[in-house]
Length: 345
Image 1 (cartoon, rainbow, N blue to C red):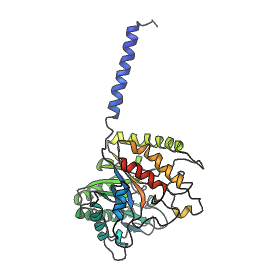
Image 2: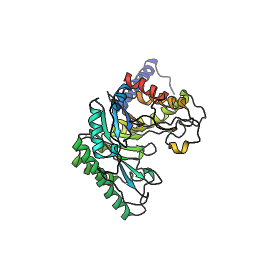
Image 3: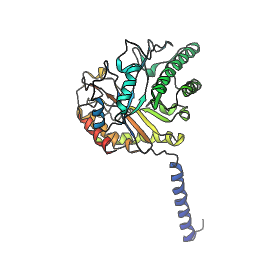
Image 4: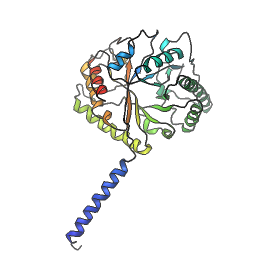
């Protein structure tokens, strides 16, 4: 091969550089930029009416958003029947239609944004295990679920709740794209606000109906470290890996992301399997420190991304912290970390 003149070599290098430059910016041009984040918590519906002062505490922490969660009930994960009532005297006040409305009114006085986020409670399991065993039952289940979520969509429209989450962690149902698109259309007929779906962190890349929604919703309980005593550097490194995967979907869809839930127990193993329920951690040593650095690792990585429209920490009790171990940051070092970043933002 003949030696090329230097000017041609330089031209080739320049061409590669320019091509890479434009490729980079065109590649990232589909990343949305969200200016003012929803700094949120997952509000626990209280047994009794609010006493007053609950939202002053939220505002003092820089919290500007809450999700409210009423429930539907499924007796078995393979049973297509779903029970719910928007209004029922046996419900906890905060999960009833009247409680949701009163909570909305009280929070709006402090400019706190609301998302209605109905959940299914699957007895003896969790929503990610809900799966029918035959097509006839799938048909019944989707009919029931559509009626369930449309009832709450009507409530959200009536009360002027600006955002609705159409489902949470229904991982074994969300692959049935046609049925979910039908549900979304039914919701849009009665509700005019913004929509998301709260996909489990193991599910969000498999959902194929993000184009119908305003936000990619992720239940962001990503595992961060197997170490017994992880440090901040370990956790941030793990977050960077998860962020890369999320950004692939963000580029593909052009949609901003909501972490519809994220949270860590105040235990030494909080970073290993963040999703594990407190009742299963009763023998695990408590650690405010580990919980706090889990919060910090999120704030120093994913929270900095322009495509992240908001985050909702699981969870926040109107009446204050109640037990150990628990997910709530209330009264702990994690609350100080959250306050630091929410107030600056």
